Amino acid sequence: MHVLVLGATGYVGGRLVPELLAAGHRVRCAVRTPAKLEARPWRDRVAVVAADVTDPDDMARAVAGVDAVVYLIRAVDGRPDLAERERAGASVVRDAAAAAGVGRIVYLGELGDADTSARVRARQAVGRTLADGPVPVTELRAGVIIGSGSAWFELIRHTTELLPLMVIPRWIRTRTQPVAIRDVLRALVDVLTLDAAAGQVLELGGPEVLTFRDMMLRYARAAGLRRRIILSVPVLTPRLSALFVGAVTPLPTTVAVPLLDALRDDLVVGDDRARTLLPFERHGFDDALALTLGRLRTLDVATTWTDAGGPDPAWDVDPSAPGPDDPSWAGGVRFEDVRLRRTPVPRPYVFDVVRTIGGGRGWFSPRLLWSLRGAVDKLGGGIGAGRGRRHPIDLAVGDAVDLWRVDAIDPPRLLRLRAEMRVPGVAWHEYRILDDGVATILEQRSLFEPRGLWGRLYWLLLLPMHALLYPRMVRRIVREAEAAHRRARSVSAREHDA
Image (cartoon, rainbow, N blue to C red):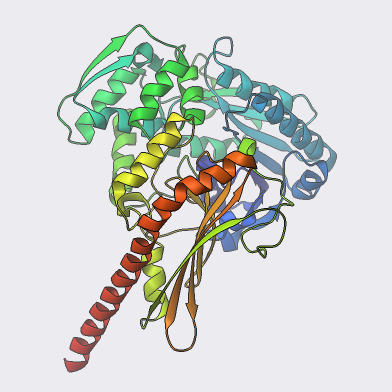
C-alpha cells in the first residue's frame, strides 16, 4: 500500500515509519518541518512533503494518490483551544481523504473515560470527527504505553528513582493495562490490511492489569533499585499532582496534567475485539520494561516524548518576524552577546565538542546556575531543564536539549538552538565554527528578540550572568577540542611508528 503518515516527527510516528517500510509499504510523511526528518535513518526511503493538517490545500497535496492515512498527531501545548484545534485538523484530513478516494484512515486514540478526562474526551472526539465521513476509520485506543522515551515510561521511571520513600496522590492506585510500544506499532501496521478492522474502535492493552504502584515497584526491581515504600494521599486534582510530577520528572506541566487527568479513572480495556482481530501475543509489563531498559543502556532510543514539540504557540512569534540569520537591522529590537575564540585545531574537533552540549554533559559552565534557571522555568509553568537530550552525541533538527530545541545543524559549521523556556521574547543560542585560512574561530552567539518592556528588562538582568558564564563556555569548548586533537595526533603517531 501507499501510506501517508501524519505525525512522523512524533514518538509513535518516528517508530512506525520503519515498521511500515519493513512490511513492504510505500510511505509518504507530511510534516510541518521536513528538516526534522533529515537525520532519520529511513529518510531516503520515504517521500516527505511540507504540510499543515489545518490547511486544506496542504492536505489535498499530501493525500493525493495514497491508499491509506495513519493519523498520529497529538497536540500537547496547554492552550485552552487545544481540543477545538485538534478537531479542526481532523476535519480537514477527513475531507481531503474523502476527496482523494483514500481507502482507509487509521487513528491512534486514547483509552479511558471521556466523561471525566478532558484529555481522553479530546482524543476520542478526534476519532469521531475522522469517522464522520465516507472513508472507513479504524481507531486504536491505547492508554499507558511503555517504551524507551515514552511520556508514561518517564513518569514511572523518574518518580520511582527519586526516593526510597514516597507519598504520592492517589492516582497511584488507578488500574491500568500497560501496552508495549512494539505491540502498538504492530497493531497499527496490521490493521492497515485487515478489512474486518474497517470502521472499528479497538482497545489495546497488555496482558496484565496493574496499578501505578505495581508498575513503580516492578520498575524498581527491574532497574536494580532498593525496594520502594509508596504511600498515597487522598488527592487527585491533576494540577496538584502535576506539581509533584514536575518536581521529580522532566515532564512539563503541559504534558503531566493531561496524563494525570487521564488517571481519574481506570485505563483498562473494556472491549476485547482487538484480541480477536489482532491475535498476536502481547508483551507483558516486565518484558516491556526489560526491552525498554535495554534500549536505554545501549543509547538506542529512536524517538522520545519530546520529539514532536516545538516552540509553544502561545509564546511564539509571527513567522514573518526576523530570524537569527536576518541582519540586525531587520524588524524590531534584537540583543546579541557574541564571544569568539581562536584555535589551531581543525573545525571538526571543535564541532564534536559543541554537539555534546546539554544533557548529562552540561553546558561547559557551573551546572548549578543552569539547574536554577530550569527550576525557575518549571515553577513558572515551563518545561524545565530536566528533559535532557535523546542521545549524548547525535543531534538532529527538532531534538530537545534541556531548555532548548535544535533549530539548525550543519556539521561542522553550525549548531543553533532555540529557547523553549518561558521568556518575554524569542531567544537563540548559536555556535558557528569558522575558518579564516589560518585558524579555526569558534563564535558563540546568543540572540534575543524582546517582547515589550519586560523583554528588555529580562535581557538587562541576564547581562551579569552572561559575563560570568559565556567566556568560560567558549574557553572550555576550545580547550576540550584541543585536548581531543592532541590525543588523535598521539594515536596517529603511535600507529605510524608501529
